Length: 405
Image (cartoon, rainbow, N blue to C red):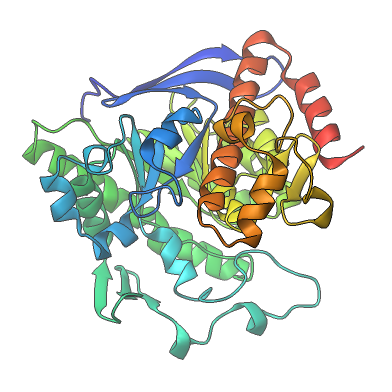
């Protein structure tokens, strides 16, 4: 067990009657007050925003993608530059995912709708034929075809951790197989017990080896990733398995039915050790984040705020709206009255719609600034509400306004 001199988690406030808590993740590159939304910078950049703008919206940490950075520019160059934070001029903590998401997105889910069962839709509609896939899994690892040039690359748990170690993230995720809800119970068991759990242990062993080989490097945490889809026995089994090992924290991942998100998170966090942080992979919808926080999740990441911004969608307290609707063409008010983001302080809805109609690229930046500010700020408000004990009433009022009573 490595002594954690510069990485640890402390709970600063617990909410009576729930698993919700506020806390601080201490990392070598700074503290993260939790709950917190972690902005995604897949390729060492948050799309359409520069790091100074990312910092200005209140972001505490950025998450990048190990698979994408491995392909371009390569972990060796990032390591030579002094690590991800220095390379992208980000003054703060960083996360890297493991490439596990690409196991599904380039494999059985390639060019398909991922994870959710849809009424009346067969597995053939959402599972990619093998001949079309760009990821091929076996019990030892995954072969990927590069989306850049078609070349073949091999990821094992050891290679994923080596890449993340070279990138220099404060928090790295163990390599795992992301499954979908179209995968049945038998496959979920096989995947969890034959791949995700053994791969997690191998990830942990490899990082321990690298820490010993490079004692001069800042401590890099490893989070074990929990799969198991909607199955209570599998979620509890893998939670107990992960809790018995020396992970620095945990990532709650995998396919989850939206309506059961809070329930599934609770299954996990009632078993996982309280003194370690929990991260939920890939969510940013307000109702999902409220449910996760209420049941003990500390951090989240998602590409959605900037992705929807690039299509003209922006967040308001009354729900998500689109800048392109005709009614906003002469609307000289900001996206949200009273919003403190740079965009709302300086630009009107009418101007932003003009930029869209004129096909000016800067509109993607301006709406992205607002959306990240909105979501980061929402999770900050959740933290404040936990600290002052008003979380449940805050949740009820906020969701009623956003989704409509």
